[in-house]
Image (cartoon, rainbow over all chains, first blue to last red; front, side, top):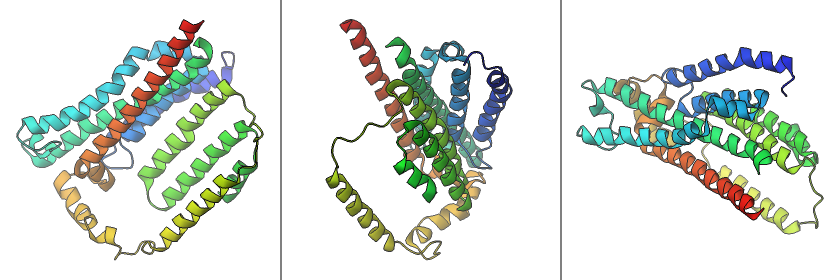
Length: 140
Length: 168
């Protein structure tokens, strides 16, 4: 698809907005619909779109395999880390009330970080699956 | 939606099957929006119609686009499927009526979440409050499931590739 000018131009126009929309879904999830899962899938879809138009090697240059694989583990670790932070600060596992002096602010902080963990893991896994499937035909 | 499903069953060209499945997912998402489940609708549209369509098209690229003719007429799976469908439909008869306020799941913890959720967590979206705060353990489990799925795919496909290069 390297010689499709329409797709390339449309892709260049749309992909930034897809990424911004993913961030909006992520950080506005407290007020509107959305959250880590949806934002992770949308941001992964933006990179997959890029890979479909410009080719898999371009996408691999943009988001290298090592980054994707560490994202898979990093998100889950971040989530677990929030849980243990609650333990360290004297509460229960995944207890957000102790994360800040004000319990409501603590809830906000806890939800923010675990949603970020969800986003990172989901985006990493989706991208990794795409890389694995799309890469098989050529390398295998 | 019924037309889409019928077309899915009749269609033999796998490419159109994949596209039809995407259309079905979008229709399902609109149904979920009509039911006020916006979060689920968003997930359905992005995962069901977006990512899985791309992945299935990638799989088609690897294995060809025409469905093989079945070797025999498999009657037993049809019977098993019909029995299970019958059992599930029979099970739905026992559920409380749609949007019945006296249903058990509306009287157990839901009132507390709806009344105390915004006060305790300061998050206006109850879905987010329940998902991330009250049911934090369950969401942690979901993340671990996604993580395990990714690790499993990495392990499977990596080994396949290495075995092939060693064999040749």
